[in-house]
Image (cartoon, rainbow, N blue to C red; front, side, top):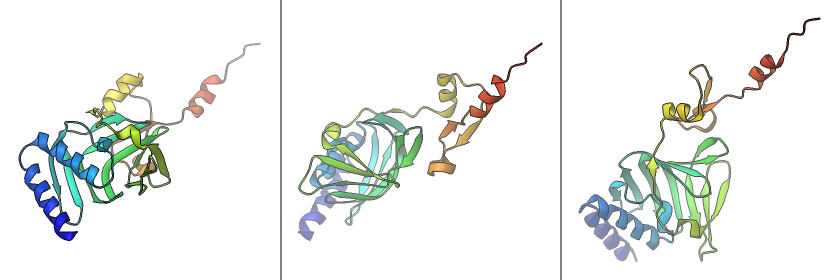
Length: 193
């Protein structure tokens, strides 16, 4: 069994060195051979990929990007982790949005034999999603920068922001603060008698 695994990883490393487009197909093959659906990684954005004999992997995307499964998912440029049959652990570079906060995805698990459910460790809980959501690699769109978010949501420069890295350990993400205090202040009316 060890000889087969070592041979597989040597073949993977050789194929990855051929071209960026072959990296995507090699990652898909690695995912399938470890019991995962191929749609865990974005389509056609992988520039480089490497995996060690112990399952430690790293891949690099052209640029950070977001996609949507049940919720929004963001991929950083560099993604690392360790893959074993039915489990990806020590995952870095993938974030899932719950409500308005971004949380790091720390790991991914599937049941052996498969139950049709895939589990995502987002630190606080394991999020359960249907395996079929990940049958096809998703299109991934360039990550929208903070300034573009401000324009998109019509926020002004005077709006205060709270860094969610203080909340969820996710640098670079911002969210607007609760404006209940402003609403309270502006709701007081002057009444002339």
